Image 1: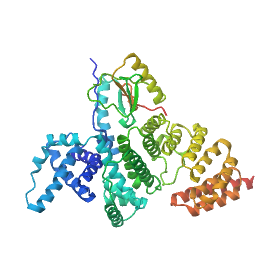
Image 2 (image 1 turned 135 degrees about the vertical axis):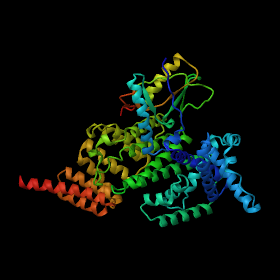
Image 3 (image 1 turned 120 degrees about the horizontal axis):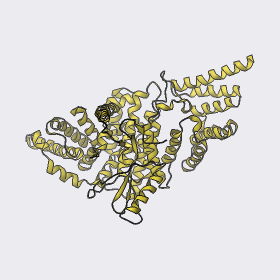
Length: 420
Length: 129
C-alpha cells in the first residue's frame, strides 16, 4: 500500500473522533470542519516526511485546533504561520492531549456529532446526507452519486441542512444516562437509515449505492466501540453485516432481483456472516432483546442455512412474533406470513394477510407476497390481479420485472393446464 | 525453537481499507506465507474478527466476571493462547471458565476467528454457520 493510501485511510478513520472533539472545542460546526481540513492538509505534507504520528486523531485535534487559533491570530495581528516541520514535532503536546481526551470524552463527543445530524426538523434523507458529509467525510459528489441526484442539488440540500443545525441549540453539556440512551437510539436509527438507503437500491444502482452500506457498517462499529455493552448496538452491527453479506447474490448479471430462496449462497460473504453471527451471539447473552437483535437473529438463521430447505422457519416464525410484540407493524406481520407459509402452507399465510390489506394496500411487497400465496393455492386469476397491482406499485424497474417473471410463470402454468 | 508472530495494528485504520486495499495486502502476505509453507516452517495462521466481537473473562474475581469488549489493561502481558472449536459464545465462555478454575488471576479475551489456516496452506473459515 502506498503511503498516501495509508494516510488517507488513517485520516478517514480519525475523522469522527477529531471533528467531534474540535466541535466541542469551537462549538461551531463550520469552524470545526475547517480546522479538521487544515489539519489534514498539514498531515499530507508532513506525515510522508516525518512518518505518521502514534495517535492520528490526537495529532489532528491538536494541529486543527492550533491552525484555527492561528487563523484568528493572523487576521488580528498578521503574524506568520509557524513552519509545518515545527508543527509535526508534537510528541509531548500530542500525548498530553491524548491523555486529557479520555474515552468518556471521545464517546460523548462523537455521539454529539452524530446526534446533531438527527435534528428533528430535518427530513430523514437530509439527516443521512449531512451525517455522511460531516461524520463520514464523504464528498458532496460521492453523496450525490449515492443518492442519484445532481451534485448541485445535493450541495444545496446539505448547505440548507447545515444552516438548520447551526441555528439549533447544540447540547454541549455532558449528557446524563437517560439522555445518552435517547441519543444513542436516535443515532442508531440514523445509521440503519443510511444502510437502507444503500440496501434498497435496485440492480442498476446497487454498485453506486453500496458505499452507503459500507459507511453504515463503519458507523455501527464505531458506536459499538463506544458502547461495547449495549446489546442493541451489537444487534444493529450484526444486522447490517448479515444483510450486507448477501449483496453479491441479490442481483443477477442483468440487474434483476434474485430472491433469498434462489440466491447462489456461495456468493455470500462468509467473513461478514461470521462476524454478524458472533455479534448476535454476544448480544443474546444479555437477555435484553430489542428490534435490531431480533432482526439480526432472523438474518443469522438465513445465513446459517447452507441450502434454502435447511432454513429453520419455525424459529424465524417465533422471532417474528417477538418482533411483532417489540415493534408492532403490518410489515412485520407480512414477513411473518412468509415464514408461516413455509410452515403451515399458503392457506394459513393468506388468512394472515386479510387484516393487513387496509394498511398495506399501497405497498408493493404486500401484493407480491399475496400473489405468490394465491398462485401456490392455484387461484391463478386472483394471483394475476395481485401481481398486476404489485407491478403498478413497483418502485423500481427491477421490482416490476421480478413480478413480471411471476406472471410469465403463471401464464405458462395456465397454458399447461389447458393443454393437458 | 518455534516463534509466534503476533500482529498488532489500529483496527479502525485497517477497517477503513477498501476491499481492494485489503485484498492487495492479503495477496502480498500469501506470497511470503507460501514460501514458508514450502520450507515446511509455517504453523497455523489466523485473522481475528474485530475487537468489537470480543468478550473478556476477568479471572481475578470469583466467580470470574464477563465483560463485553476486548482486554483493555496495559499492565498485564499476553502469555499464551488457545484455539478452541465452539458451537457458540456460551460454549467458549464455558471452556474459558473451566480453564480459569485451573488457573485463576488475569484475564482471557475470547475473540472469534475470521480466517484460519491450520497448516498455513488450507484456509478454513473460522465460523461454522
